[in-house]
Amino acid sequence: MPLETPLSSRDDKELEQVTSKHSVEADSVQGENELVEVPRHEELRLLWKYDTRILPPLAFMYLCNALDKGNVGNAKTDGWDKVIFQRFWA
Image (cartoon, rainbow, N blue to C red):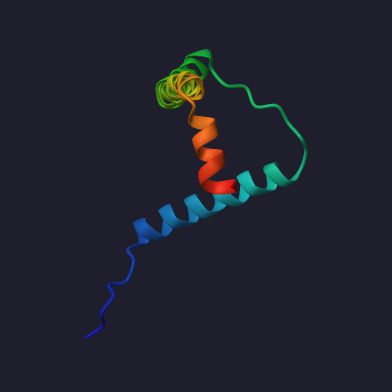
């Protein structure tokens, strides 16, 4: 008893269409440098995806950076730099 079932003729045709489609796309990519026309709604959708996935972490990192700068300034005012120097370099 075979473990794999043979492909039907419909599956063979679909497989040929998919492989021929990919080979045509690969040939066109390797050929000339062409500009691809992207519909405006797809471009806006991609930009929205960038905005929702990249900007929130960047904003959070910017906030952490600002908080860290403030804390370092306050620590220097309190003598932190002298304590660190004495502990590690003296």
